[in-house]
Length: 296
Image 1 (tube, rainbow, N blue to C red):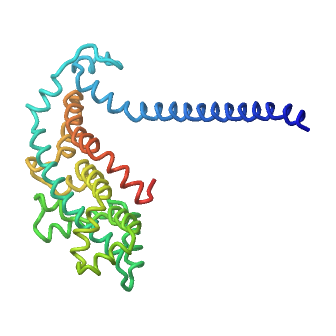
Image 2: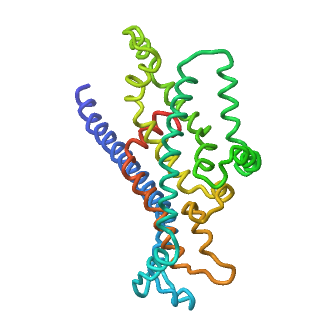
Image 3: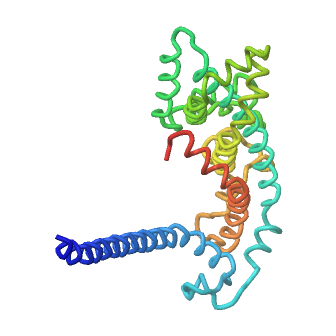
């Protein structure tokens, strides 16, 4: 009996080691395949941004003669110079920044408050209200332009910053995201705060908000990106070119017969940088907020 065990145990150990090596090799192969797919997708996603940079630093004559390639023949700053001197790009960027900052502050306050009430307070019709808010996500933005214009015009806000800021101060997706996030907070934590004498606002300010930094980071990045890049509604609401936002102003750099593409791409590059910087700063909190809200 001992001879049989002595003969089979080394074979078993070899079989186990072989299966572990096979599983390890398969896991490495799967991981490499994922890396390859991620690298290819990243290059595809980054190529339009790279092409915008190449166009912005290329001479205008190269574009006119079709000599532009993946690498610019010479680095030329004429596109940036013309964009900043011949067009009020910095003024448009300043308008976009002012509108985006005020709009983000209002939107985050409204979304967080509404999401907290829908998640942690029970009242008749709560589910109906939430479904109605989510249902507005199905309505195209273009459908709302005419009634929104009538409302803002009746208030006398046309051609002002408030016409762009106020109508979008509550985002249905932001309310949905905040509600999903607050559902993950334990009710016992809020009940303990109220047993200690904290009111509703005190509980929200001192207990809930410190735990909601990932959610606030998500709302900040998404709302800023949306407001910074918004085009249709500012185009309808603003009449004075001095009040144009950057996307609206850049659209007027395209003429009917000729377009200064280096200057246009230089302006577009200026419009992309603030969003990239903000995302880079809030990246860690942004990923954590998306993960905790269940929207992975």
